[in-house]
Length: 116
Image (cartoon, rainbow, N blue to C red; front, side, top):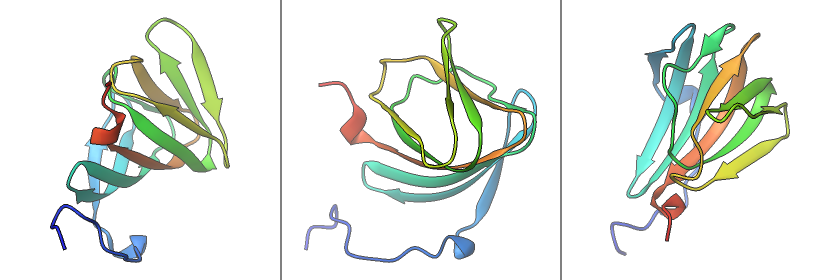
């Protein structure tokens, strides 16, 4: 088997280490699995979290708990609540996450989201 392939596996997120990432305000806790060209994360933003940068990276984001506002640098925004998702390719948006009360997200990104 090619070592770039991902064999079948289950993920017990309770055993995946959390890393802390400070925002402009609040904090994010990431649990990250990294594969070749693919990153899968459970990300929890604390109440009052505002990202400290505008992100141009592509993502698939699915809201598991709470509510998050996705601000665009052009002034538009959208809100995700549990069961909602957004998807965007690299370099097609300049966005950041903001949450008043906290949120838990599943985020998938990687090489497959690069512009062709």
